[in-house]
Image (cartoon, rainbow, N blue to C red; front, side, top):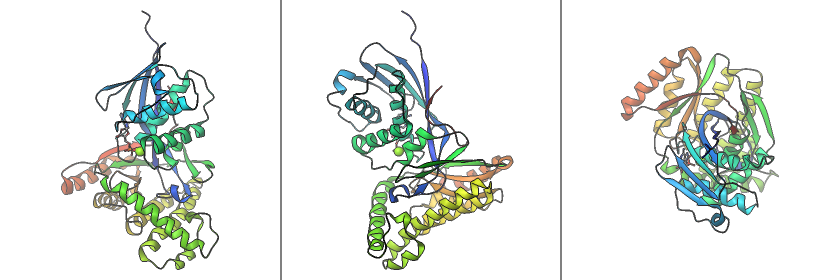
Length: 369
Ligand code: ADP
Ligand code: MG
């Protein structure tokens, strides 16, 4: 038997630099694809079978393409992301081949770095690779978002899949979540680097709080629209907050409107190479997420506060939906070790566990290796 050729693929996670809880309010966000992600080793087969295993989760799943074309039953496991992609590709009459796929990842699962989007985009990309289909990366992102929304049943916006698919090395994406207009802007931090800290705290509250925040934003928008013609909450002005009499609704809208301004200021800061200003905006974003949007947690606040107390750190904030997951910090490159030691010490003192650290950068999106 001839040895089957192995092709490798890589799909990154993503970090949103700034613009949190903005995607479902129709505004601008600023994600990057990161160095950490999921790798796949793929051997194409001549039959109709897809076999997939993951180094992170035990067990192998086998799909028969003749059957998945007709029906696909999700069973609340990681393989749903894979089956969803297969079934939806088939529904769109895309030809796909059998293959063996082995995935391995250095992206923490369920920590807000979008391992789910990395997985969907990876599978959708590699399954179309052999066909040499002209893969439009934005189409790919929209397709994967549909799989996650409809098949897996998670109500996510477009940012994650878009960033994983369209990332470019050394660039941050200024993405309009309404129109999908995307401006690639330089993400060059000079003598600073981007440190990711995983709080490793559960994100149990994240799902229910997320839905409540979405509803509160809709309420705020409806009230403002009685007075002003605005398309979405991100298009409103700070002065429009005067129409919001309910304190909670006011605070939610204040976060969204002010966060949108911080994204625009961050774009300018990056274009001018003004990294200290970017740092200040990150910290301001965190304070707004904590005090006005109320999606931070004690652990995330401890990470951020211990970061910004150190003068080698320009700024820090929680990233992702909140209630656990990760923080980012801009830290002087040559002082990263002492920075991490300090955080680890303080965090351990409080929680008897260490956060995980990753030094990362803006990298290319999904690709074959
Ligand atoms: P996040 O996208 O923030 O990492 P999610 O809960 O949306 O968190 O997605 C995590 C899920 O994605 C995991 O529970 C698992 O089902 C799937 N997943 C991600 N990476 C892998 C992997 N390497 N192996 C198997 N499943 C994975
Ligand atoms: Mg996810």
